[in-house]
Image (cartoon, rainbow, N blue to C red; front, side, top):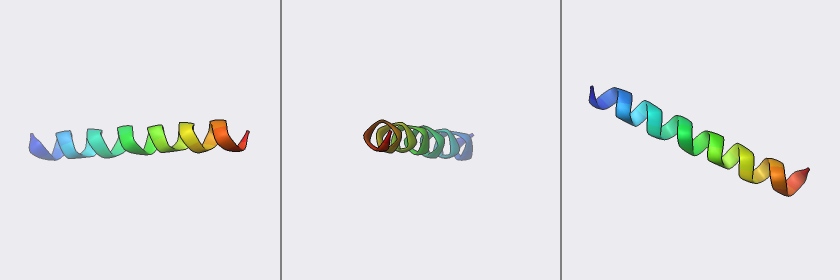
Length: 26
């Protein structure tokens, strides 16, 4: 169960980073 929380956290962080870099670049 803990692994799912870690995976979800990482995915959210990656998406947030992609959105941040996407809005800055484009």
